[in-house]
Image 1 (cartoon, helix red, strand yellow):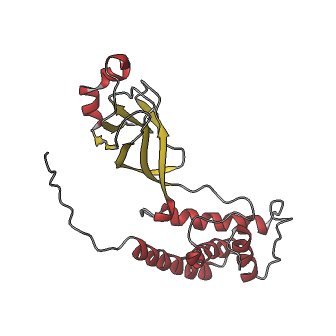
Image 2 (cartoon, rainbow, N blue to C red):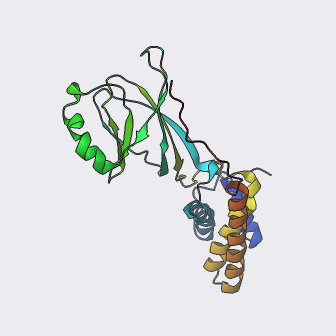
Image 3 (cartoon, rainbow, N blue to C red):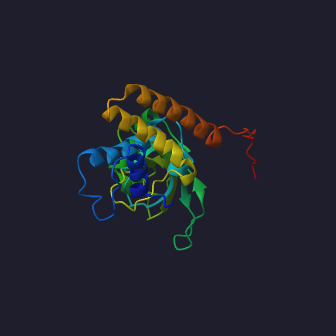
Length: 229
């Protein structure tokens, strides 16, 4: 069985003896079918809204820096940015090696480095620190002198499914979790509160199983010793 938006919606339809959709009429379908489409996206949103860093929403981003520019916006789909992952990637053309950036508190940046942003020509070089602003931006210091390649990692907020052949970012092994969440909203629409509560309880249990599968792991001890050469 395919794993896409259309197939998920049709499983909801079959469960409640509704007519199934096709790729030809999927986008124009309204009424109940519009709600069944919404139910799938709402279930996926509920999974994403859990306070869990789901690995299937992980993104590694590369950004080419603009010389003399200190301030950069967060990605529009970012849910959580991992600030301990920022690094400047090695570049043979620019003759630089890979270095990790230190996280500097924003207030410390304002005290120690704010003049760099306004007078970049006096300070430009290879960035060594990154700071999270009070808005949806981060700051680099010193300002980049070249078009260095910045790498960092974050967890995204997935876009809603729209086209019938779109595939969720959630792995197919957890198709049933999406379905349980979707059936909760389907039963609410039908005003079948007992069935809705049963579907919700099942969904919450399945999400907890997902969390244990992906998040619970044996932690290892990492040395903080840095060898001095």
